[in-house]
Length: 436
Image (cartoon, rainbow, N blue to C red; front, top):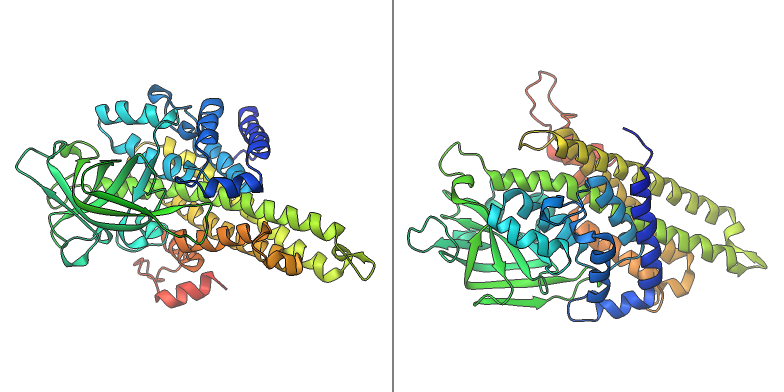
């Protein structure tokens, strides 16, 4: 791994940081989250026009920039530093790669250029509020049972007639909560169970904004800068993502949806880790600046040894998380460039560990910011609570940390039996070992 960034990568980071410093200060963030979509639409179009941010990791033939996971991670780091309320995570990190990987030629030609130019936002809707498990970050069911169906609830897909799954032949029923940007996205990628819970399969469907039977509600989220919505589907027409021949039928057929979600999890975890590092670094920087000027007993509180030690510990955590996030992005890029459909186990483990490390650093930096700002740090008017809410919300959405670490350990076989059978030891022992 070459730890040095290219001139182009440094340019992306430098340009985005300067633009966000001008257009996304604390006052602008508070104003943006109170709009109907939860973000500044004009700023999003500006980021698309000047930097190609929505299509940063999309191929040039569909209007994208053609960069990889490293560039996307650097952009997410700067977005996290500013707590940018935007469709970046929902659209560019989660939804667009699935359309690119699974979509048919006409679907890619129709949707990806509109996503790349910022005119279309998208959101991934997976039932059960189990985004980390669906993306293969915390282990669990790889068979798609999380999508629901039958008595399991979730979202069910029913095919009308025998049209082979063409657009308009499918209807969706169910509800999905905690969908990032689900209330405002112009395109929804809904995971649904077709054919019942036990003998069925999980597919991804395209649902357009304004589809009949679709009801969307913005939820009150812990972190206002990452808006979430509830999606209710009542006989909603939907188009399967991909061609019927590629989705796999029958026993032994490859589950391309599960494979695509697992590969997405590797790149998404690297981007999420970098975003958390950006937020942690910003919270730490604000705290250091405050303790240098806040005086108590006739001297700056930053001169006290206890404060120095606390901030030094946070600094080490942030730098550790930064290194892990950069390595995860590099490993994800190498895995993306490799041939084959299956996920890279080493890259997946690196991304999971990087995300766990970054979430810990983010929470440590936000907690120190609240405490060391004293009484003012606990008030709604101060910026410290924005970072603390982001840290707490991130672990709820993509963690918890101990499950991220445990699954990474399982992927690497760290707790396999000595006989080489590969059987993991008891789950609570794994959890205790990796969180020690």
